[in-house]
Each structure stands twice: as structure tokens, then as C-alpha cells.
Length: 133
Ligand SMILES: [Zn+2]
Figure 1 (cartoon, rainbow, N blue to C red):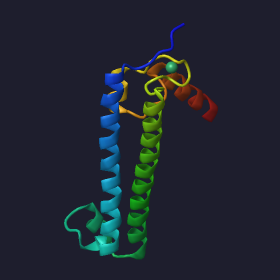
Figure 2: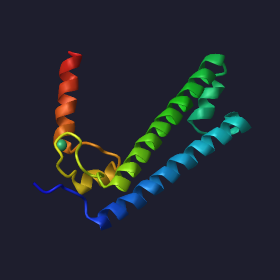
Figure 3: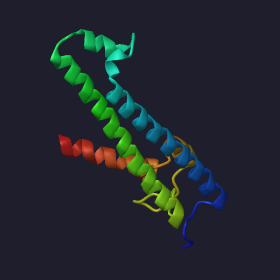
Figure 4: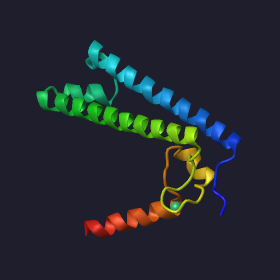
């Protein structure tokens, strides 16, 4: 059986895609971190200043927690994108970790760091749902 692989030009394409998503995530983190040190309180008219005008320590803490969560999920994304970058280098990118089939291009366009094809992903979610019960 031939080993499945993405053609080099597709790998190249996804490499660019992943790189630009990485830059975006890193710029986002940099922005938020900068804002926090300047004092996010001065930002006007949006939900964050609304939360601040609730004027007790509690909502300020909530806002910080929310930002921390956003940062955490962005960092997680960077981890996943870096993993995907490694898979591009060793040529295993775009191959489902469970069944070894190619992951569809449409799926990779939306989630370039996906490690499972849509079928296996659904099977996993199914399993998780059943375990929770
Ligand atoms: Zn699969």
C-alpha cells in the first residue's frame, strides 16, 4: 500500500497559511499584553469599558479573567499551529492520525492544524459524549 501524502505544492500552500495564522495569533497576544500594561481601562465605548463601569472590583476581575482565557486559547492555537508546522516539515501533514487517510482540503482550510479527518473526529466526539453520560 502506498503511503499517502499531500502533494508538495499543497504542503507549500498550507505552510503559508499556517505561518500567517501564527503571525496573527502572535500579534494578537502582543496587542493584548501591551494594552494591559498601558491600562485597558481607557478603551472607550465597548463592552470592556461597560464592564469596568460596573465599578466594583468583581467585574474588573472578571474582565481580566476573560482576557486571560482569550490569551490562553490563543497560546493553545499557537502550540497547535507549531505542531502542524512540524508535520509539514516531516511530510505527515494532512494525514489523519487515526485512520491514515488524507484529511479533506476544505477541512484543512478552516482548521490547518487538524490532526483527524472529519469521520474520525466525529467518532471521537461521539465517544466523549458517551463517556460523559
Ligand atoms: Zn480518520
